Length: 90
Image (cartoon, rainbow, N blue to C red):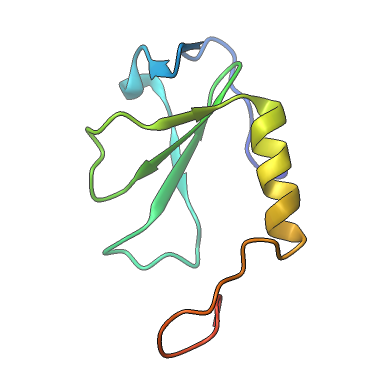
């Protein structure tokens, strides 16, 4: 999964709920602003995404097929948007 290792024995996806967020190892991009970032965690059967400013809020859960489809879209520039004052990813 391109740099994110899938650890054995992590909590699994049940509905779209994380059974134990404390057991997940969260990753942020080196491009993130420390004040605001998206965090990603990989579990045995799901990828979780949360807002770094709200770590206790329930994260979004995606199965591997959904996550891989999203990553392909990102790599294909399908989610590039113009931001006020500049280009996306500038």
